[in-house]
Amino acid sequence: MQLYIGATLNLVGAALRLISSVEGLTCSTVPKAAFYVALFGQALTAVAQPFSLYAPTTLAAVWFGPKERALATNFASVGKSLRRSASVIPSRYYYFALQPTLLALL
Picture 1 (spheres, rainbow, N blue to C red):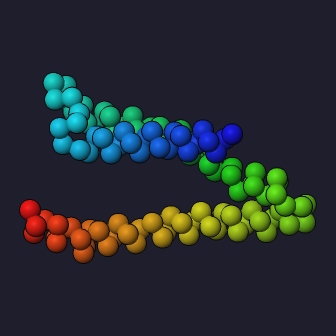
Picture 2 (spheres, rainbow, N blue to C red; picture 1 turned 180 degrees about the vertical axis):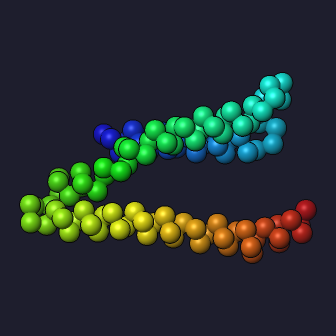
Picture 3 (cartoon, rainbow, N blue to C red; picture 1 turned 90 degrees about the vertical axis):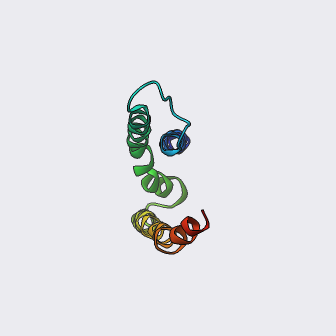
């Protein structure tokens, strides 16, 4: 259940941050409305963080025996770090390779 709550909060927070960055979708009558929408989205993702931090220990407690829990927790924790590191690669590719090409097409 905790992963569903964390995933939902992350999804809503990321959607709010995305909406705040799109030109024309935020309220134009309120100054800095996009900033406040992005700030609220960031706050939601910060609230979701504790729900996903305990996922490796919960996984190890449910699926593995007492002798295997430490190793399973270690692998799951390292896996989270590797996923975060791997997510940097596409963003760098977009920034350095695709962005100039897309801007040239406009």
